[in-house]
Length: 378
Image (tube, rainbow, N blue to C red; front, side, top):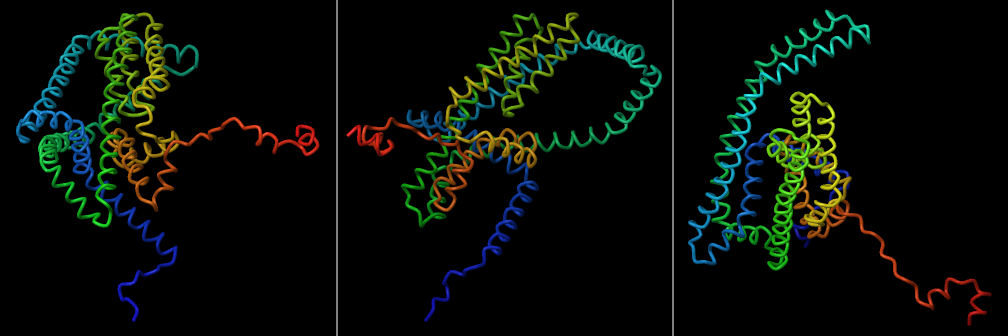
């Protein structure tokens, strides 16, 4: 008698269709539940960073609940200090606003005059076009402001829940491990522990390395801006460094604000060009020496796959997706490498292995020789 629970074999096209439907539904719900999912992922990553501190406190016989609370106080205090320093810098900018607006108006007048004298574009026409654009901007600003306020309110309410998520993730970490044991009961616990440990190591090393890179790049940016005599060098230097969170293009985006500020506040345009040069030089150092040396091969994803996943996660979750793209893909690669049917996909997004060559021995050299030469050698 045939087993009624025997595996049902489906045609390849049916399996492919089911896979596409599953991926589509998964992406749809990830987009709909973006705020919750993103805040949970960030909470998991922060919990991974805080875990060594919590473990150290517990080794000193500090109760787990108290140890977690101490970790959260450290994080909240650090973030509060960070945003306080930023608010001080922003308040200082307000004193510069009238001067910058006057300089901006002068530059606009020069641009209009250049267009009229050299490009034969009527000044009145230029003003009409600018006024039309400005009116459209004001007309749309109401809806933009409303959307921004709603998004900011939702974001703040979500961020306020993150300490709660982190607390329970760290408190019930053993419980979650038991949950994985039950879900993957057919897998040996040693292998499951190895996979979970590898995920933790990859994410921890990537995040710690990323923080180190941000500090080093911030110091280099600040030093270069100090040499050029740019005001608010520390703020602009570390602002550009924090933008490294957006891989590949972040530091270029971070250079736009100090370049524009220098162009408006300094009479010498070469200083603004020097700011661009500083950020470009630091980006070359960061991409070719600093990040590879510090982060190393912890996130072993090839550049093509990195660009594709950046576009995909960015399309799905915006800026948050760009920040989470590489660590999330690194986690997926660890899972792909651990599951036999998924190993080809882990190989596909990983670094291309270089073919290792070794010197041939005498016998191998003889085999490569033509027969007449081989007889002479023998």
